[in-house]
Image (cartoon, rainbow, N blue to C red; front, top):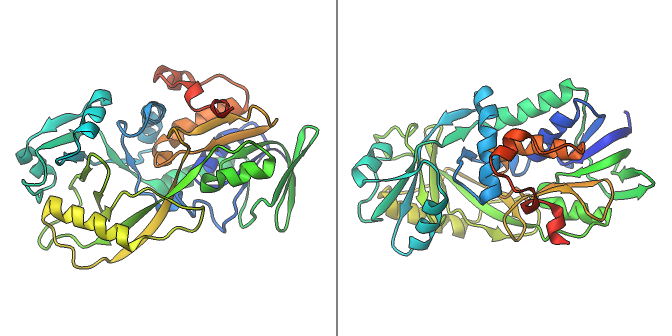
Length: 364
């Protein structure tokens, strides 16, 4: 096995796989994954929806810039989203409507054409986003990995980085069974991003993994739910997404946890399902399956993208929160350009991205 590379990308989730797929076109790139397969944690557990109105301003800009590639690869399946506004969520309603693009308030009668079983007593206002879609996450990840391998990139799984040491212009990465060397490290470690930074001696970002739980429940008898809209309350205390003839229900919790192999929290699921039942009148008598995933944030909610201001050759690509899938086509192109010392791609700049808002330098 070759052990010398120009760039070593640590983490083969959607962030690492996507940026590596671009970098491998002109550099010798190693994609290093601690698990036995890529995308085991957050990427493999995502219910990703393309929502250009979702997240802070940098995320929205990157999501808009990603749309072209999603469409070219036919990775989106249209599904409207409806945000319900029960009592006590006026502040969240005002915030969303102040920054939204293309959303509109609709009547209960219209809402029931998208999700027939809404309870009229649950909320007074409903907001429709007609431009959202489901993302084929597995195909997206596989496309990135195929592109990476077609450029001659090297993928090594089951090898966690145990130490990162820099001498001169070169990093040495020691794993359980191998030692690799490269001029640049790209930290795409997901929930383990600050752990990777600590190995390199970098100032930590304050990255916080947060658990989210998902339950699979049967659809109401006599209803085919496949074409129904995504629904949730505007304050994000629950949501429901139809998928494969079932209903996926989440409490949308963001419970701070240490990096780990996440699992669903039964109490959180019970609370989310109760809210879903109140909104729809659908009685959930049994959970068919459940799982948990991690979404990792720094304090301001923006990702961390760029070279470390103090550690030479150490590039950050973490903190995507719950937006990593929908931003990945654009974020990976941006990160690859910055790794190579190039300018922000023009189409991303045109969406109004403020590079300072995602720079690691903001923590200095």
